[in-house]
Image 1 (cartoon, rainbow, N blue to C red):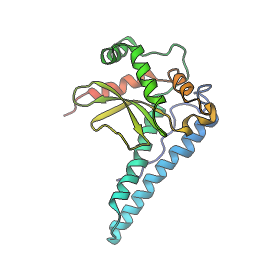
Image 2: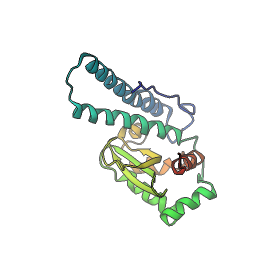
Image 3: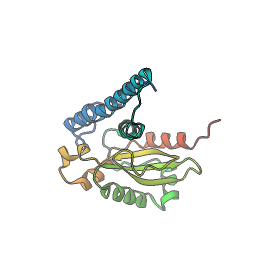
Image 4: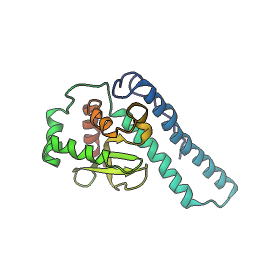
Length: 203
């Protein structure tokens, strides 16, 4: 496995204000996300060193640690991509709104379920909208930490980080306010693109 790196943000550090402040975004991106990247690369170094010297290593512990750091990196990378500068009355286009409504009954029902998923996540975790690789249906689920309760063969297309480091400096303990404000930031064309990619069959 090749080492990974922190990709540039697709916007300026001030662009998500006032929903996410420059200070919070800087901390979240350059410190917390960077820590997951560093964690992956350190594990790769340990594995390479152990293989070269034919040392025995604790693969159970290594696997758990790798899944935590690598999933943290991948989820954060998607999180940055599906946001943009705040917009009032921010909603998907008619075509993607219909896809959401077909899966959840209405767009309003989808937002209600997604909000409750995010708000009710125990401790640290994520709310995730994912596409089933088998039939293309949309499913909302929670991922605790970065690696618990993951659904196999479901591709995340919209994620919301509800670890305290994602909102506490701006919102303190008001997670629900952060979750509600998140709708203004969603880059719906990007989410729709990820949906199309996740449902396109490849040979």
